[in-house]
Amino acid sequence: CSAVTGSGRKLKDNAADWHNLILRWEKLNNEGSGVAEKIVDQRLKRSPGEAAAPPPGSAPPNPGRPLEQACSELVGVVSKMASIVAKMERLASSERGVLELETFQRGAAGRGGPLFHSWPTQLFVEQSAGLLQCYQKELALKQRVLQELAHTGPQDLCMVYLSCWLHQPYIPADSRLALEALLLETGHRAL
Amino acid sequence: MSSEMSIPSSLALQQVLRKSFQHLETNQKTWHSVLAECIPLVGSVGNLAQQLRALSNVNIPNTPLQAFPDLQQRLHFKLVLALDIVLEKLNEKLVLLQSVRDSHSNQLMAAFQLYERDADTLDLYTCTQRSPVAPSIADMLEWLQNAELYYKQQFLKRKTLLHSLMPDDLSLLESTPERWDSLETSSDTLFRVSFFVESNKGE
Image (spheres, rainbow over the protein chains, first blue to last red):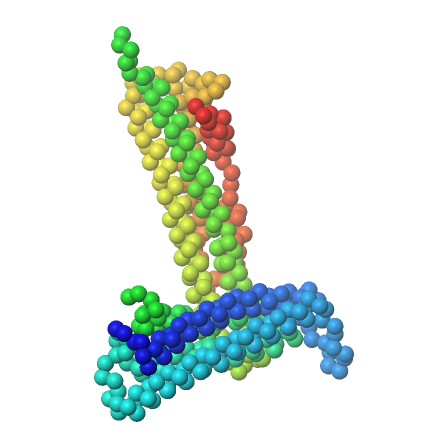
């Protein structure tokens, strides 16, 4: 199948962009895991058994350079992840645009045949929307973990924060399959 | 007498036994290499168990994560999935250990078959005769049997340990790295075989 013009081209390029964004996210996630561990280690060194908060009204403690540096590194990681999600939002939006154009030009019946192998345009929109929702929720979790990790928490809660970061509960195990399916459909992977 | 006299059966058997020792050396290398690959995997089992324990000790609605109502079950699912993946990899390592065990057993069986075939010509003196540079036939057969016993016992213990692991038995999972390490034993026989093969290299 050839998809060198218009909608086909757009969807094919988007599939490549999804792939690149998700790989970048994974790399940032690994980087962030290491930094998050460092933060927890530093907290636990200061008060073993409980990463304690300073009593209210007291002057904020000097966290020490390593902890400060690690926190600021993690802020950087989360900020890059937020940019990735913003780009994902634009991809999903452009795919909705492709579907709207198709509907406008050909009516509700749509194109009549798939642009590539078998997927109707609607399916591209649904897949993207699904992926976007996962990454948006995961980002929200990471932002909350970032806020809390640098403050208080008993040891178990710190470990839960680390688990959340590493294991990404809002990104289902089969999301990688969804990405591969997208790449197969658009011809980025050989069938 | 013809110069193409058949090699006395004791010499033939000794040659087969020496070859078996060389196979054993190779098997030992594979065995140790597979066990080394198991170390980080077994560590992961302990680590994941600690994470599962921490999650079970935390009541998410009472924490800053309360805005994520389905978080507990999602994270639990991901942790158990990660554990499944690690246990699957450990099972693959078990299969490799099993093939080392079986390879050695086959070697031993072949050696014993040759011994039994020529048993009439191999008297007690011949079988127990040692030299300064070589153990006796009896020694070599015994060492090969001891090695087989070592592989069988080690494999069985490790298989039993791994197959007893259940995702909801956190204490068992947490103690896995320590228990796995405690299974490591050295074998005098394997040391002797190694020493003998080393000292006869180049023959």
